[in-house]
Length: 215
Image 1 (tube, rainbow, N blue to C red):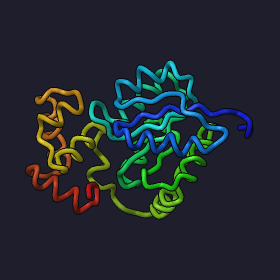
Image 2 (image 1 turned 60 degrees about the vertical axis):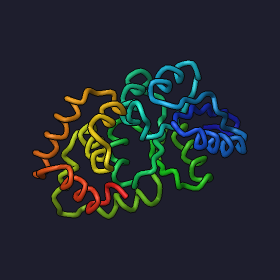
Image 3 (image 1 turned 60 degrees about the horizontal axis):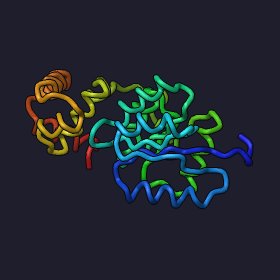
């Protein structure tokens, strides 16, 4: 992409302080402008259409809908939109799921400002972006002869449910945050217990901690 071309970016994150921090970083560039922002998934889906953005910075964890769900819907509406996922989670846990769902790149919120700017420019140019840390993680797994861990067999929704249960959230809270019924969340819980051969939520939490799925 030409250095003179302006890259329009849309920011979707439920934390105002994060959105402001991102805007300050991008304000220091000459070729990137913020064309819109949203504080939840529903707003993101509605408002990005009006922004004319080429790149979306999308938080993977939002209160009403998960970033991966939002990503899938947005890519259906606008397949050529470059979506860069932002996350507080360990890169190797959510990154692959995001990339498989159509994301152009993945960054943790601890990334340096320069890395964020470079990532935006790269995905705006039609390329994929993964951090050096994630690239090393993927390289370490190439050619390894090992069975995939049980959590890798879960659907995106089941995986989200696992993380939220392991983080101590009650079923009612999970249902509200994922816009699902309590019955549906309970069914997801029962399903993932069977898939992972675990007995209860306490064992789920122990598994998540042991496998560094949660802090």
